[in-house]
Length: 255
Length: 130
Image (cartoon, rainbow over all chains, first blue to last red; front, side, top):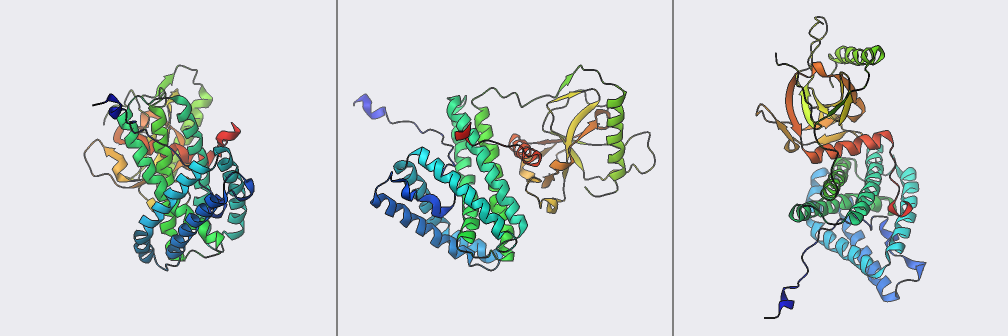
């Protein structure tokens, strides 16, 4: 038996959230860097995504939304993955970044226009936080790329699986808000809580990718609180006492 | 009464007890625990934030929900879902943190740090712009 048979590449952890952006902006269009047939393929995948998202956006209640999400999830997930993979294979990274940045700007303008009309402010706020988190995730992913191999490969793969799961779930709900703005479809009042909960998956994704980074660099952010032997004067003590008095005064209120 | 702990760990949770000298108006809510968030401190203070069990308060995105599965307790009681009130971060007198309640997972702590960063308006430049 040839030893070459055993040279199958081992699985590597992946931390990607690089095609996030307005769905309709996923097609680079006028950049002239991809063939017409490829562009058509991307447009077709985008249309398939839109179709699934419009189905869930037509739900009136949280229960309906949950049921519908369960039904479209598989198709959505496959279409999303196919779109991400196609973009990653056919479009240069620099173009994807350029399109994502342009999309982010446009999405921010649309959010200002549609908040409180298509959805409540709470959804808009969670969406803004999500965009911030995605930016943070991309920064950490960049650091991971530079940092090299993890200290524990198995743990890294487990983290990468969790990351993929949470980003996919978060992406679905992010795409729901994008589709709502793109097609000017209001998100029904009773569905908005589910969308916000779904967007929270990005918080997990952000924590997971930081865990992955700590497998690559010495983590000084964990452990026993160091007490520094610095002067602690009357002012410091008064401020601390004041903080504690405030706390005691607030004790009857419900925190 | 337990003696004050000598060492605090980032991610541990404590009950913040009332001032023993204060006999008026110092009744603490029994459901409030404080999460140690600082890694460094000086003098008598340690920086912490409250973990409230009133999860309905998590209406703003930087108030991070911590599911019970990410919380452990030292006395074996069943943890409950909580919300990290990141905007209530403050310096606490170590001598008031007499009773350890438990800890949150590393993942939950990192999620809470993201909430704090967002609340503070920290900006992360896009990797391309770095």
